[in-house]
Structure formats: C-alpha cells, structure tokens
View (cartoon, rainbow, N blue to C red):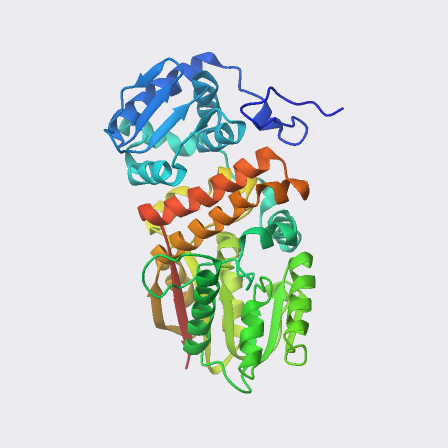
Length: 418
C-alpha cells in the first residue's frame, strides 16, 4: 500500500511520489524566523492574508488579492527550509490557497525586490540550492530533462492546448481572447510572423530546432518549404510525424529525434521557438555556434525566447528553483543582452527584427490554465493525481503572473547572415 500524508481539502499527498510535499520540515525555530520575514513582506504588499485565527496585518485593502493560509505553521516551516521551492510545495500540499491565484502571484511579483529584507539579501546566494550536476544539459542530461516534461503524456498536453498543439506564446490581434478558437488563430499568427520574417516560402530549406507537436513544420511545408525538424522528445516526435502525415506534408517535412549539437548541413532559414531556455548557460556558446554553422549565406534565424532582466538573470543563473525541481529541469531564461552577446561573440549573424509580446503570453497562459482546470477529471483518468493538478495549475498561474508583473517577457528575434 502506498503511504499518504493527511489529505488537505480533496488532495491526498502520495508520500512515495511526492516525498518533499508530504513531509513538513521539522524546524520550528527556522519557521519562526520565516514567519517574521513573511509578516514584514505581507505588510508591504498589496494583498490580504487570512488564517484560521483571523486576518494578519498586510498592505492590501478591499479588492486586493487574498492569501488563504490554511496551515500557517507548515507554510512557514516549508518557506524556511526551501524558500520559493517551499512556497510552491506548500501550495501543492494545500497549506495555502488563493481565490485568484494569478492576481496574488502578480502582486508578489510586483514586490519581488522587497520580499527579503535588505540586510539579508547578500545571504540569498548562500542559502539558495544549486542545480544538480545530473540536470546539466549534456547530451544525456538534455534528453533526460526533456523527457521529464515533454514525455509526460501527449494526451495531457492535448487537454489544455488548442487544436494546433502549440506550446509557446500566441500572438493575438488586440484585446483578450474568448476561447480556444481564438487561441488557435493567434498561434497561427505567431507562426506565420516568424516564417514571414525568416522569408520561408517555396523551396526554402528550413531547419526547426525544437519540434513541439509539429504545427510550425506543417505550416512551413504548406508554404512549399522543405523542413527538417528535430526534438529530443520521443512522444513529441511520434505525434508530430502523425500530424505531418495527416496534413499531407510528409513528403516535405521530416521530423526526427536529434540533438542540435549533432546537426549538419546548410539551411536558408532556422526556426527555434522557446527552445533556448532549455539549453542552459553553459551550452549557449555551443547553441549559437550551431546556429551560425547551420545558416547559409543570406539566411535568417527566427528565435522566439522567453527573456528576463539581465541583472536578475545573473543573480539567479546558478539557483535551483521550484520550476527546475518540478517542471523544467536544467533550464535558464536568458536576457536579451545575453542573447545579443552570444550572437556577437559566436556568430556572423546580426539582429534584423524584434518583437516583444509578453502580454500575449499572459493571455495564452490564462487560456491554457482555464482549459487545464476544466480537464481535471480527464487528467486524473490519465493517472495524474490531485497534487500534480495543483502543481501544474501553480506553474501556469506562476508563469502568467511573471508576464503580467513584467518579471519576464517574450520576444521574437530575427537574425540575418550577410
């Protein structure tokens, strides 16, 4: 029989599957310190905090987001032991909730710089865990990291993605989207813009690094391009091949499992959508050198990348976060400056076009999360338990809040080779 912790609400924690969620760290002393720091942060943030013993002093008034602390002691002890990892695990365990999770996390994001008292900030680097060596993006490590996310289940991703099965920021035509049909149109708009800017048309030799589930490869093939598309995910590869065949494009688009470091050839255009975030800083030189080597004279590279402020990236680049532990092992969101520095140092490419559209990513994530939450029963039937549901919902809300607060952004960056 599988051991479980006490259920919180309707969520029982499987201690074998989620050991760090089931276990509450034992140190009450450190929990007391974390409580004092948290109370200081609550008082400065535009939120309200409610506990079983009544409301806590906080900086928010009527109408501001609410943090419901169901088990304050467990919350503080997890925070003391794991920082933001503990914050996320505490949500997974059901120690706290929020009627509007995105609004609450956006408020936290807006006050991010002030959450830790100034005298303690130099100690953050010492307290933060560092990335495990096993999660570095060596060839074997990259395959393992990708499998842990993208090979979860094609059926799971289909629950919340639109019909294009595109798992990256959409580009909307102004105003909020109403439903998945709007999202599909916005995904096609994003893909078409990248293909337009990289001049993909009849006869173009296109390389796609990071297949997803085939939407860009299909769109390019329909323009008459000849597409080589590579992924490290076997699940993605199998479904992308089937989708390419169903679209009647199998003679123009080849999808295979391969590492970008293995590729050879010369291409008129390269597309790499939200893949650089999975490369890792240690391997950026190899990645950008590969882009340069694979781009033919006069060719173009279309990158779509999630980005963050350069100083914040440098401060957090060696940290091991909740997102690494549970969602995207081995990743690092680059800054635009870091990308530009790699392009100058490693390539003969130059920036020809840029578009920022972080607000569109927030809208994309809103629609994904609504669809994911609506599909909770279907996810459970696929074997994903209540803790997984809270984890994934937190990930989508956390990401949306990042874009809404401006902590992260997304850009299409087009590079051209002379």
